[in-house]
Image 1: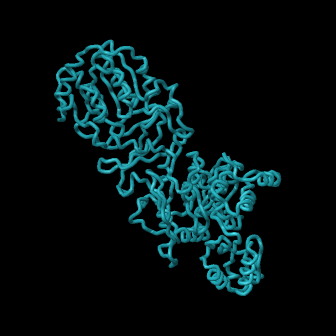
Image 2: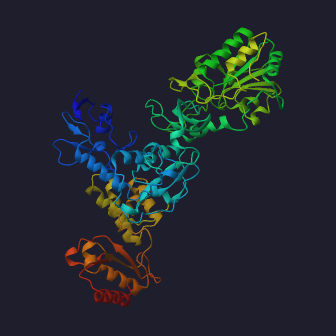
Image 3: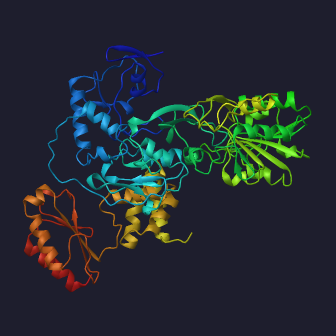
Length: 473
Length: 161
């Protein structure tokens, strides 16, 4: 492979790689604003200046491809001066309202200003101000903070496939806005807030709720659909504040849809059932397990499992029914109209899949049949669901039967059940799931579950145990 | 979609097309041609140009708003564009602007109520050797002073063009 030198270090590169990528491999970070690995290169912000030997002027690293024998300096005097100059220009109109800005703490402008700019400013003129348009329910706009990197415009055009952000006018009068001031239409609008290098586009859902540096981060997988986008749950004090995508070039690249991003809300909803519930009253675990035992009583059962459960939970359920309820039949359910992975097609050209549950593929791998093939059901039906599977689609089919729900249920869903035993949601458990491509990925526990809910494995163990001793509650 | 642009526009575009390496390069001449027909560029026209060239109308809008010579708002019959850049400024462009504003009774960027005159500020017209300069529609008027400008406006008023 060809080699070039960056800050005295020799690095190999593939032809066509730009200097930012190559430098990153050499452990050299070049500051950027407009460059994003998932978007086209425009070299607009002029922050990534580097000095290249035998070239008369500073070059932008994002738009310069590495070449054999190239000698690049990223810390020389002209570069430092050039970056400081760029920073000064970029901050001319920036309001410096970091104390009240949601981006503070994870802001590229803040970081690069600290690292490459000056603490003093020579500019005394009045700053330009804008009246902001309403960009819809997902994104809040603050044009005063904008540095015109045009990442949002390129994201819409190249990734979301809808050209809805535009740059109107030019120079100092430039306004980055939506066409005719319309609200955003894309279902991937949350990404605008992620890629914005300033606090210009922020997430309404997260606005003023938590400072970025207080959040703890847990890397997990989105359970919104069978795509299995990699994401990070950001939480503090056992409360989830937001979910952001993680880079995975094989699956979701750098992006995530709004549905998946806002999906976590149901796990903290006040309508979620957090205590065992029999009929319309809440009961203790000891009573609940006893009632469950009396009702199922080693008979063959019809067991429905949501395809939103993890591989481990599904295996537990299969093993339990095999050992304690011989002759039972197990079916998986999830999304109405999507019963097999062959029916699970992409909804759009970006990420979304038809199956609104994450582990349809895994359930099939374990040989579980679809609920569509269910001909008849036992009098008592066990329904396991992880919170995402469409419970209503099966309760309709099973009218007249005695339904016992185990998993994550809301009050509305619980009405059709004679009993509900609360279990863990995807934010509270570990486990693995198979996405639609067959890639196995790991869910990780982000927050501690309430002590009134139990894992499916524990509920099954207590039910199987003849002499029950229930710990908590 | 209803057509807003004339056959003449499409003929002109056909003629120009071989001159450029790709169709996208037609955006600027297309906008000029359309402005010649309409006097300004309404939203529907921008959309039609976008469809014709095969780029999103939003991109056409971005281009049209980038250049000051495209009018995104209706303008009067006579569009006076006074240069206020360095050379003209030193030779009294501000004075000319004040005079024109007073004479026409409008502010810079506005149009008279009878639709005869629009007044706007222009970036460098490249006529620094003959500063101060202005453009009246497509015509250059150079080495201006207040008398000359007054005379010009009076002439236009009489001619009613």
